[in-house]
Image (cartoon, rainbow, N blue to C red; front, top):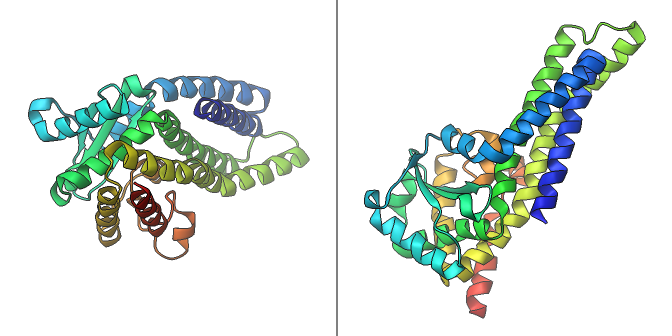
Amino acid sequence: MNIFKTAILLVLLTLLFMLVGNLIGGVQGMQVAFALALIMNFFSYWFSDRIVLAMYRAKKLEEQDNPKLFSIIRNLTMRANLPMPKVYLVPMKVPNAFATGRDPKHAAVAVTEGIMGILNDDELEGVLAHELGHVKDRDILISTMVATIAGAIFMLANMARWAMIFGGSGRSREKGTINMVALLVITIIAPLAAMLIQLAISRSREYLADQEGAIISAKPLSLASALKRIHAAAQRNPVEVNPTTAHMFIVNPLSGRGITHLFSTHPPMEKRIERLEQIAAKM
């Protein structure tokens, strides 16, 4: 199912690029946009995980760097019947974690420096099990590509904005007016479209990863406790991360107060905790 979603997203992105290219430069502009979209789709599939890891200056860890962390992840992967992922450390004081990669054989789990200091071993195990749940359910490719696609959509908005400044394609006045209106619409709705794509992909997958993590670790209450701690830290000190990657983290690192809470890439924390407590009761 996630492979199908990924294919649909890539097609939509390509069509968006071609539309903007046509509005800016006619047939020639559409052809250039199509070529750019193909190149970006290729790099998104093969290198989007590296782009995200580089964006956060994540450092690859070896087992001797943190034996306890590797031991926890190895035990969890054995329970989940998954290959051992690569492990990265993100130089960020706020506690958080995410997984990335194009499939379980090419997966990576990243944790921030802050998470290592505030969670006990059971809570850390719950968080890592959640991330491995994303790996097991093959969420990691689509979530990483969504980050790239959302960034591309913002780039489309900027392209449309510059096209309006320089008068579009220079064709007839009537045609130019139509193009300018279309470009204005794209400029306004592109960021909204990026946000809606993140919402559509992220919220349901977070619930499923919580459930999968609870099963893999057999410690749903520890995961719930970890989520509370990470959420509290994020509320006290929201960090400046790229909004297009916010959906990848286990807890939204951006502030979710007020009306922005309605458009958060993550489900309400209270609901996540409630569901984990229900899983614990059934266990």
